Amino acid sequence: FIYPAVVLGVSILVVVGMLTWVVPQMVQVFAAAKQTLPLLTRILLSLSGFLGQWGGWLLLAALIGGVAFLQALRLPDFRFKVHAWRLRLPLLGRFDHAANTARFASTLSILVGAGVPLLNAMAASVGVVTNLPMQQSLEEVARQVREGAPLSRALKAIGGFPPVLVHLVSSGEATGRLEQMLDRAASEQSRELSRRVETFTALLGPAVVLLMGAAVLLIVLAILLPVFEMNQLVK
Image 1 (cartoon, rainbow, N blue to C red):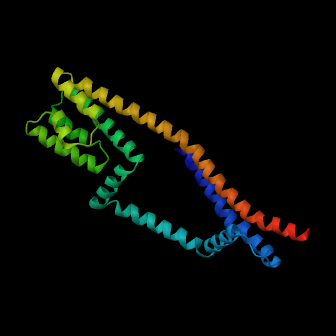
Image 2 (image 1 turned 90 degrees about the vertical axis):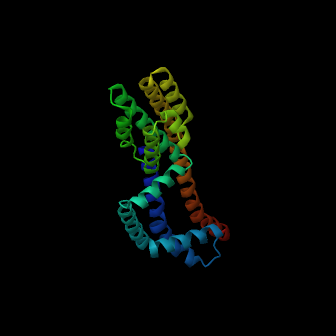
Image 3 (image 1 turned 180 degrees about the vertical axis):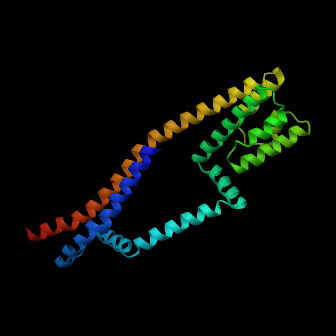
């Protein structure tokens, strides 16, 4: 995400710079002409005036909001709600879920393969999951396993986990190859996550360029349209 983030950041700086420096310079020319400006130009002038008057306050409010958000994340209830909301995001939520699932399955596979009892291995594996709602679900899975339920049945009963993980765990329990099946499930999740991220980033870069290019084009058109009209009047 570094390349799209850099492109987006630079593009926003360019657009803000044009609105706060270039557009105000053109206002004087338009005011002297005393002509009716196109709608696009009037909208641009209003936006430029708003940023010139309130831009500093908006930046300050954004900084204060960011600091307040980071402080609020220290509260367990608020952090839990943010993590649950993050899982519901259309695309990024699937990234988060797949990454945590792969991390859990891989860690559990290593510990089970090293001879650690399943309950102890699950307790340690839950600790590597960074999403709190998923942690809570896996803790409930561990509780059911502690009461005698098979791991695959507990995962299926809780819900929310990939069917391939449940199927491979069930196969591993039936054949006595739980370590290998967990490792395979982790590999499947990692490959799926890699494919999704590669596709997303491949589309995100051009999309950001097109979006920012369209924004700059609108600003340029808003500035040039009155100039063209002035030239027509002169002719």
